[in-house]
Length: 506
Image (cartoon, rainbow, N blue to C red; front, side):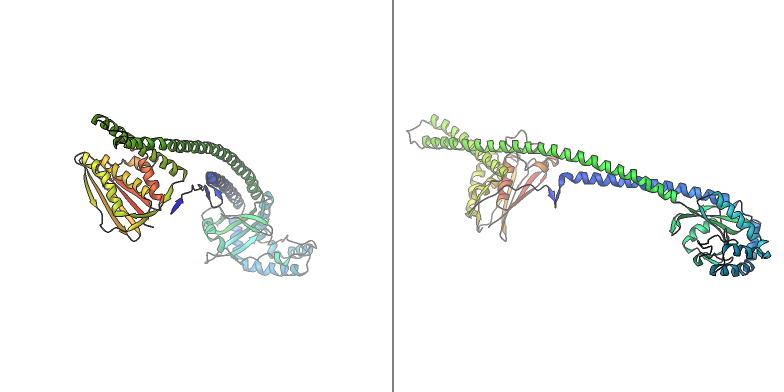
């Protein structure tokens, strides 16, 4: 059973998004967030300046209101309401403006009362500030969410008349003493009894957008009422809207610059990566070609060496046999290296061939140990082997299995302390999976190198004086994964390393 592992295309997308543009999205989000934050901060600064302006207006306005007159209005509010109410009701129905003034002017109680003086004072205050739309006085009650209306700039002489000279019923002004709901402004109004203050929030109705201000009115050292003003702030909203345009332009410019730079960098980087990939591919192709070309002459040389040693071309002297044996050993090592290079090139190109067939695991492990035992004895390394006697027959690639296990055992022997070294090799089968581990008490792998230990041509920094080519673990990992298995390790520098392998039996 043969299969070939094909190279997998590296996916550089998350859903539909090229990961190269993720930094752009992050930078864009940060830029927009920063611009929005600055815009919000600017809004807050302008809003605070507006509150300071409203506070100054109401603080100045309250100085023009006589507290004694306000106290008099509060005392007589019931009588005032009775005197003014009939005229307002009649005006609401049919009375024209001029007739209303004529009739009301004949009422001596109203026109001789301080309410007229206070009303005229508030009119002058309103005339001095073209944005001040409403100005009125409120008096406290036992319920902090409810106040009483005292008077405003239009109570005694209403001015809200329609085009026919009649007063709109909706604009019927409140009368002195009427309750006034302030539940939406309790916090601000409660503070207003201590000094001038402006509301925090703007409010909008059909007549525009306004911000309110409040200031205490005192009489004989006691606060008797609050002066309230509603200032139209269309200039403020226009200013806020105007600031939005440059901030939006700034955000757009930043996004455009980031986009251009990112696209340019991605293209430059992409071209560099393509060049590197092409060079890497050419290198791997060259490695594959060279290893293929070397494999044939090396195999031929080994064959001829065997013929000479077997006496196929005549008897050899002892000295000749010794020399040929030495050359044969060198050729065997060279053949193993060529095979390793060939396997590495196949792994790199994703073309590792897997040829699975029935494999007697007990015989296989014994063959490997027959090769490793002489090496261990030469270095006086103790081998602790634990292999069950009844291992099943698995569908495995013998060549790939040998590539992994022989490499792990050889490394364990090679990197263990001579004369005091110990290598453990334990095998088990769980379910349909073959598991084994190779453990040594050698030099271990430094933590800084552990992330790269399975890399091609990489060797740990503490084994540079020991012979090696850096291909072994790379090929071992590729051989395990080509069969659907996995490999990992645990290591402490100076204490040893353990490699754990799992391969499905197929």
